[in-house]
Length: 423
Ligand code: PA5
Image (cartoon, rainbow, N blue to C red; front, side, top):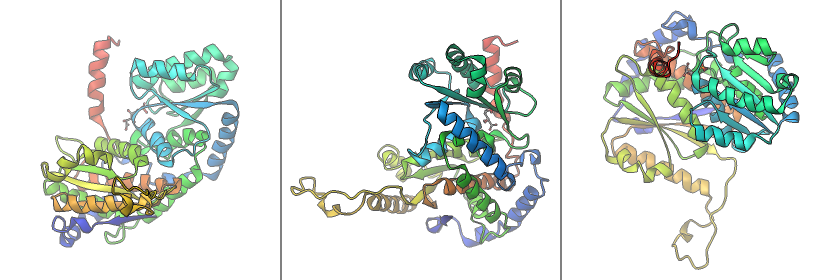
């Protein structure tokens, strides 16, 4: 499971501070569980892991075997919640995918799309196009370009096997296309918002096709669903984390940096940023979610973290046991003077770098906590996804906002449509 270390909050968050949140956390818990809080119509993610049927997981495995047989690669088209969780999972799990995935539709870069089309044009292709609304510009126009390539290679019948849509049950352009052309399709539940959807068909379909162990991913989330349903601030680390964030925010810590010494966490942090940024950044307030990958960023942002404006708190994501470890070689000349670590493992040194950084940042005025995963596998990631989903919901309720809407995302779209002359 996951561990939660809070030693480096000392002097910033007291036990009394946390205890004083118990009543508000209980209220947030009750509102969430009883579906009577703000945005309750979008809390379908809460019991989603336990409601996924074994038959559905099997169906995806059968589809995956079929697609893997007739394809060299998969193009996953989507943006925001229809993109980040998929990429976060695949990058976190490293080179374990059976079918390479390319991503499109998360930007409008013509160079990026050109290069993608050049890379995939001679491969056997399948496409998963994901959009809850079915109307988002970026994935819609990327799908047009990828579909055109597919149409130049395959018959209409073959396209039915190679184009898979994940979208709303009834509305949106993607649903209309799936119905008209007979593309295979999966439904995104109405009551699950984009950024909470990684464990729905949004994530499970492309991840299954890529060969990820979706059973383990879902099992991890199910365990988290049970573990974090307990309304006890002592035992429920998810609620504790949510309470601590709010205490720190009230004390002027307005930026949360998610840091990791494990580069495979990079896109998990990107997913986190969408989840927390869209959920909490409202009414001119909210904790700004940022991320840093160490050691890399210690040599670029390390100075700011250590001595810049003290409005930051930090949440490390640590991995106890990496998939692989290597010894640092002995060198007979020792010209670089590093024989003192020869024979130690790289992960040992990485962990010392983490320990040193957490201590130094704390001493420099950055309170920090650590969420630790035993292993970088699908089970623990499923658990972590749910941990953060529930944490942001409780955090939002503690601040009295609706964590499930994102009205601000529309502002740029309206201006862009006006500039593009959309009728
Ligand atoms: O969280 C959200 O709802 C959004 O960021 C969406 O994930 C993103 O805009 C993609 O939307 P859609 O899946 O409708 O294309």
